[in-house]
Amino acid sequence: MATSTTRTHHDHDHDHDAIVVGAGFAGLYAIHKLRNRMGLDVQAFDAAGGVGGTWYWNRYPGARVDIESVHYSYSFDEDLQHEWHWTERFCAQPEILEYLNHVADRFDLRRSIGFNTRIDAVTWDETASRWEVRTDDGTVHRARYFVSGAGTLSVPKKPEFPGVDTFAGPVYMTGNWPHEEPDLGGKRVGIIGVGSSGIQAVSEIAKTAGTLTVFQRTPNYATPIGNHPTDPEQEAREKAEYPQLRDAARNHFLGVPYSDVQPSALAVGAEERRQVFDDRWSRGGFRLFIDAFGDILFDQRANDTVAEYIRERIHERVDDPETAELLCPRDYPYGTKRPPLETDYYEAFNRDNVHLVDVKSNEIVSVTPNGVLLADGTEHELDVLVLATGFDACTGPLLAMNITGVGGRALADHWADGPQTYLGLMSHGFPNLFMITGPQSPSVLYNMPLAIEDHVDFLGDAIAHLSERGLSVIEPTAEAEAEWVRHTNELAQATLLPNSPTSWYMGNNVPGKPQRVLVYLGGAPAYRAKCAEVVEHGYEGFRLSEGRTLVGA
Ligand code: N01
Image (tube, rainbow, N blue to C red; front, side):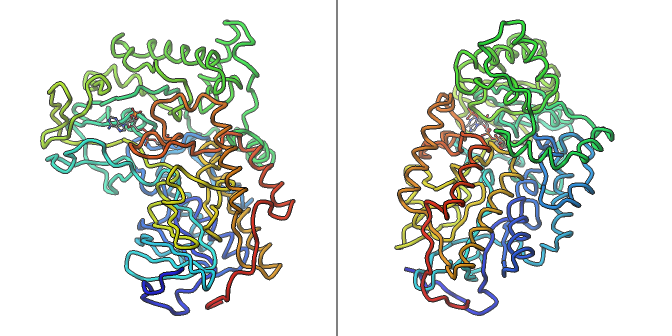
């Protein structure tokens, strides 16, 4: 039952058709679709002071997209995609933020967004079949539909070691980097974490810091991004073929129009395999991961071939053999942690000012006022500490909003053993609550802007479908949800993913977090086909109803 006692305002200004959380790729398109295209009254909120979502917060040196910008961009507006010019193959954060600001202005989205506003509580009012959404200034807004575009990697993981607050110098998180670029010139900088963020940051910070100490627990399989300035001829060709490229992207496992994947690394001889790896390595992007051999993520022996190839390349690039070996992953399969892409990352360790510290064998005990203290008593003295320690992925952003559904059941309780969703889009007991790129959808394993557009189109169509039939409530059945959870787990078990000791894909990067696969591993085409089938069968697996008396409607 709704907690109407928590309501501090109840007037027309706070009653909406839909409330959207987030002003990143997801929130912006959701506002456009629901308000501009469908004519709904939409109110959006974002804790940030501007649009951009992940690209607003992640301003660390080196932050850059790792799917080609021509593909990592909206497809919903022909003119937008033809007129926008990306200066590089893989654009850096400032340019993506500029693009999202351009989109917000071009489609007049800003007027629907309350910035600097965090959602404190989201509660289903059963008497009215509406969501009550309380923001951090105590205001309560109400809406028929609640749409989360809160992101997948937007809640930074809390440090596992004590003492961060005692550090005498500044501490910067890659996921919440200051807007005024800190001056790291000549400073003794330490960075903890070598995931995608840490790896991108190391390449850049190494150039300016006095010294850079890299605290590495698990080495990563980083491969070259292959970035370069946009080639005008290639850009013209791609723009001429945009409809076909988008179509091919949506029909590819990862949502990029790559088309050279070979069936099996084990079906070819060593020489041919090497040629394929060399080709994908030099072409950059995710080609080595997703466009080399189709069994890399499924067969340990196939995976061993590419893992060994990457280790050889690391040894070629790093001068000191001991440092090179320390940078080589040995105890988990390639691709089971999200593979980072890099520019001159390994070469950074050839610089005199960069030092690699193994914190697996000698773990971090605490941060002290002077620096980082390790288990053997060594203290690394630092002026600046950078935390690139990752995120409470996929479920974290949703659970942070304190969502309570039917019967007063908290989402946190419903998900106590891991996320439970249908299609990674909705949960049983939480009617009319849509999770754009939610847990158990392809999300981060599908080119995000396209994954977002697909989800927003699905939920927009579902709302239109309800409205055409005089209905107002949609909720997945418990059976459909249980089957989806079973299916996503089964897909994960068929891959090598569960073999990674710490991977946010599995939720095991955060101590105490339930371990359950957070992404759908059947690939974007299979997922899209399933969603289409659900719609074709009259929203199979969902219960559509009239709901209760509508207040303020
Ligand atoms: O986070 P991560 P991220 N002691 O979880 C280490 C996206 N992204 O922010 O592996 C010591 O990958 C941890 O060590 P370990 C992308 O999807 C995209 O880098 O747990 N170390 C690991 O090295 C990416 O996957 C781009 O042993 C500790 C690191 O911190 C996702 O965001 C760019 C530790 C965390 O790596 C997350 O990437 C950046 C401890 N107590 C990010 N705790 C693009 O290019 C954690 N670590 C688009």
